[in-house]
Image 1 (tube, rainbow, N blue to C red):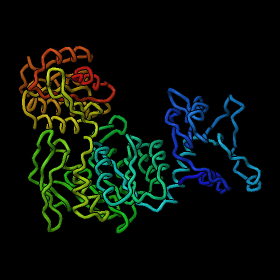
Image 2: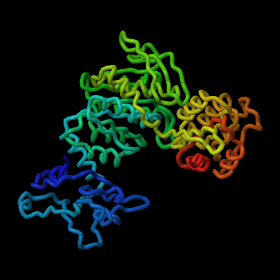
Image 3: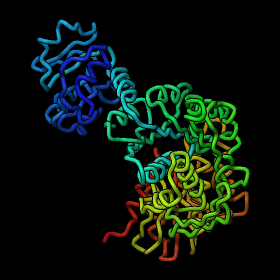
Image 4: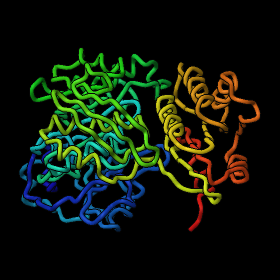
Length: 475
């Protein structure tokens, strides 16, 4: 278990007799629990220093702070100038106690880096443009069939979230599955320096975040930082998507062993005879070395076969047998982020509104194509595409014209989806463009029947989840 002694040793390179256990770390005072470490980080909208007292009231034992607090009654140990060993005997470490540092965020990262190096476990790092979170969930399900496994919860995949996840690790864990987000060059390399992954999984290299990264080449280089950070073979393994030309190129960027997965017989692990069964999951055939196996798993959509291949590959790399791998793949876990509910009229609503990119939009439309009944696509703006904005929206419009019977769009960028759909043959009377949510809810509420299947998808900033929430049948 992480202790105050570990924190102080990480920060000042002196280990006092301070064996108070730290249950976990939090940057939100509302998530502070008894025995936790609260990290006060200044943010754009709120400053964590304003909530130190609230965190202590919820049971936090210690707080990392980078400025003086107005409440003089809060005891503070100043660590900025180091910590002389001569002070150890007289130091009072009883909680609640503030630990004053130069930067709370840097201190959190330093503690996580120190703690990771004390733990005897293997880390699986996951990055990519689409499918990181679903891959993380399924890889963790598979590995947990043999090993005690931790995964970073939710989307804690950045310079704050990943260190918080590592501090949840205790000595009993054998594997950690950590999603790693990419926004700027050097970010994944920084996260890898903290996490020390032995296995790196790359889902694909798409156009999401191109507005910030600049180009698909820049996204490739940024995500390649994961495979570059892996130890050389045989200790390190890069699990790469053979079907994605950009991901396949990462073979040149790593010293680790390369394990390809995909739909091609040239991959180490590959699948064929894929059947999308709608909400009943997918069925496919797996090939590995001389073995051929049949699988039926509860993931939704034909595109999910790649998620299954990644998780199976991770299981093989980490020494699991096929019985363990299939048991993990068949776990009745919730389909991440995609929620299927019924409207008051009985229509099936597929709420996939967490986020959107051209790649994930096409995958969602392919799922809609597998379903019976009239198909209604409600598609919103895709943000942060940069130079790929028009190309991405028009590509989605083309697919929507081939899949959907009715198309509703939300936002100014999504008008490019509507225009492309009309251009590729969708009847004008079946395309409806909106700038606000409420008229969409009204249209759907008055036009859906029990035989309809409705896909709702757009970038998170549009809050399209409110559409399904407004239409969902109340039991």
